[in-house]
Length: 592
Image: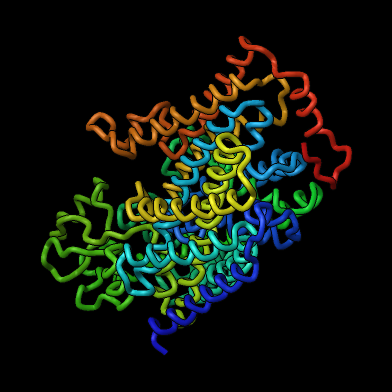
């Protein structure tokens, strides 16, 4: 069976499964729509959290960034994994004990203010839409390649699927759909990794193959995988794969922003409201970490193997030599298929009929290239295609390639659905029901939530069609916004009795405005010649991906300063904070 037909069958079967689950688990009440009726088993919730967590950024883009950044890409692994631990230990059990539906509801109650609740909703919407832009781009990339449609058509198809199971099923439908999506995406990620690891090193375990020797007959055969890759990329003028490409302060800031941003992500936090009690919240956090680790420990190997396969495909002879490059007439079929998407392309600048792939910004390589008569690098590869293209580059069976397509779509759609539900619940539950129309009936609130989700899907599709960067970069911006706005308000709300509403509101707005402004200045519509995205122009040398760390510090400082010069929180609020942290009655959710 040809690849296109097989892909349609595999991806179509996964869609039928997701929609069937959504219909089976249709939300019949606001409790089921927002938090799945608080009845999800901790193992299933851990699996659903894993799917919610491992978005298109994890599945599609993270290994692609590691492939090209090498050691520098480790910040994403450290930040996202460490952040989940932070969330599980510092926030999840306490928020579950509090027992409300949403993060803005907690902030509104804790800071005894509708204004604080509204500010939290605004922060949440900025975070969620920034995040969902990356997911929808991932959906478009997968459809554009494997269903052979243009990016816009792919986005429309993806939006339609999300509409059915997010709008109809609510959190209950999304939770059980995400369990199925986790199974699909983890198989889709690990199966090709096992194949390729065995091909390159003879070791089928990717985590071990990463440190094994390359088999004889391959480029660098007999050398350790990373040593072989280092030599190959350095011979082309690229930075050594195992060397860091970022400053220490930027690595620290990005890692910290990703960690605390993770702990402030509303669509992940809300997962801990879906279990019956506090004990199950802790248990599901542990299970989620296990399920997340299955992919995150494989990602470095996938990135390294993808970079190796791509480079050795283009270098048919001695790496970096005059005659060692792939002839355009011999371009493999996988490159032609991906070229149609516009995500990989080449240009014969010197007219020699070959593709020169090298770092034309490296001075030593420039001199060497000029001696060969080369006119600059001729290959351009979008980093986001590396995981999806790797099985094709390695010439794996068509069923494996089709499985990867289904996994990429599952990863993007699972997180997109969770984010869209968070947006809709913020509008319907926190703004309409909580502030504007407190007497709204449950039926009307449920309808408002579904309408909000539908509108959010449309906006998400537009942002996915016009994203400000690579999937993982866009997602990193969302984490920075979460780190600088919601995380400090939540953590202070749990562990400090002295932070009042004025301090919380001032802190959230300061962190959000500063971080969003910085990102837009360097990555958005306000780009000027003086604001080019280069380290020399960054504040303290910190990139837009890491600036959320500074925004978080500003949030804390402003919140504490304003709280000191304004009235203390009321006594009942201070007792509430003490009660949230008290371990008595562990295993029982206390509603206030």
